[in-house]
Length: 248
Length: 194
View 1 (cartoon, each protein chain N blue to C red):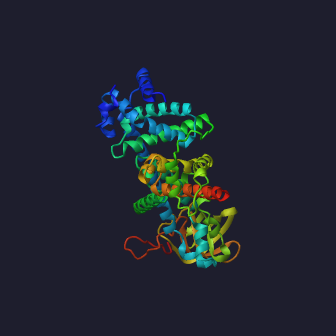
View 2 (cartoon, each protein chain N blue to C red):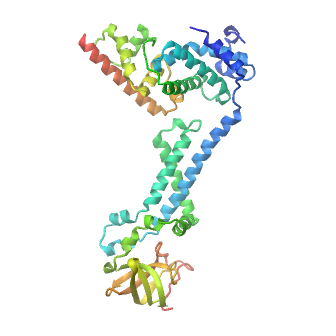
View 3 (spheres, rainbow over the protein chains, first blue to last red):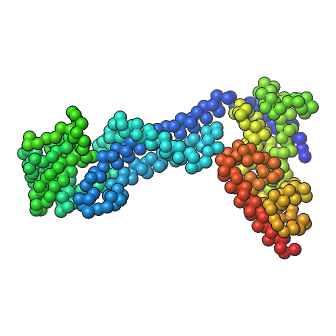
């Protein structure tokens, strides 16, 4: 066998090959760490929206339409954000695996840890209002977002079962107003002491959900009005929180 | 350039620190690993001797370039084998070299040791053992072959293999178990015919 060590050393000297500086390796390792952490952080943001949507889901009305809890959950699950969360967790896993000792952790351990941290962050971000803010921003700015994430519009457009959704066109008072539902159907909304939830933006152009009873093809008797997103703060017991509007 | 004798009382890790100051010490480090890595290349790729020599030179240059990345928390041997592993696989893929598997040095002791670890109840025909090992390794998926080579031929433990191929210990254990099953099945199959 040739003296390969000598040949290699001669090549190193001839080509003036030098060891790469340490800072490059340190920077590379930190970059992998940073990328992993960023993806976990973004996963946390996604999970805050999931928290927001699940907590503010209309869990109380599934029985009204004769659906099971599981069916209702499947219809209203925020699939977009769940996929978003899964994607970012796997991205985080990929980058963390490339850190110095990341390879020592199995996929299950890495993914479990990422999920745990994302959920923890998600809870924290939800509590400070980031989940709601993100959802509203996406709703405002991202075309098609509302159809993608809020397929509950279909669920709420069941006037024969007492559920209606639409955009406010005219307001006479809280017990008498007109809305336009999907497919441009016009509805006269009437009621007696209609309960308008705190977070409802009760103004022309605003999208709302209504619980009540269908009188005919054009008239709907309202019992309760909720904001399009969420239940509009169901908690009416806490002082200073729930302001309920009656006969304005 | 320093001779092996001058370096013999120094550990690999000490030599790495010295190389970063004086290039001449690198010769000692290479000499320690020249034969081991050369046979390692042959065993995992089945390349010819000439191809293995070329690959080994690239490995040494790569080791030298990356010396500042060596972490003293790892054994130098694991780190060097890791570079060798990566360089070999990359070279093999790039050049699409046909595996020969004619040059793998497997002596009788080594073959018997490997077979005895497989817990084969029947008496194994010694003549076919080496032949079967070579044949089976040639056809084996690379991921099984590399852990088998590292464990039996390079005598690396699970943690070292994990550090070399950068996979969790659980994965290493599974791969090794499957590679042994494949080998056991082949040996039993061939042994029955005799």
